[in-house]
Amino acid sequence: MADVLTLAHATVIASALALPDAAVPVRSTTLGALQTLSANLVRESPDVYYEIQALNPNSPGALDRLARAIERVREAVGKPDAVAFTALMQEGQEKTDGPLE
Image 1 (cartoon, helix red, strand yellow):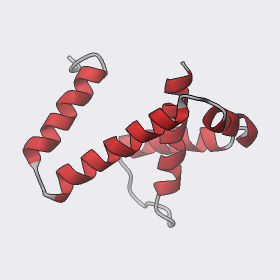
Image 2 (cartoon, rainbow, N blue to C red; image 1 turned 135 degrees about the vertical axis):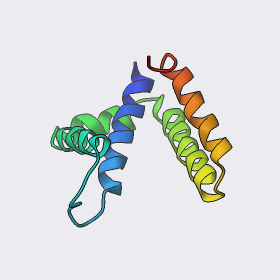
Image 3 (cartoon, one colour; image 1 turned 60 degrees about the vertical axis):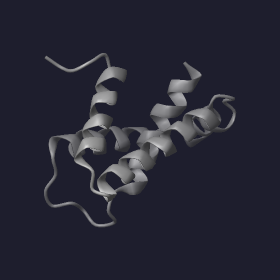
Image 4 (cartoon, helix red, strand yellow; image 1 turned 180 degrees about the vertical axis):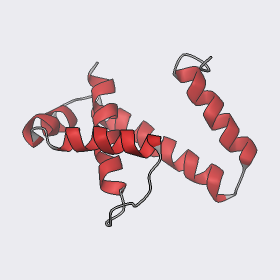
């Protein structure tokens, strides 16, 4: 549980930090959901979330996996390589209990 808490919270905090400085006039359903989730989390107690991140022995591994995952996405779209990107999406499906019906 400690591992996935770090991963989930760090992902949401990083997403909030990565938003553009100016308001986005148009947003997708996905961006809207992510903004809502981010807004809720970053208004929680920073002390609690700091402890989850900093005092959790699983944090370094979870944060390393997150950084590697972002780098893999960056590489796939930077080439661009549609086959590699599709493979990432398929891997994501496998890790999230397979494709949605």
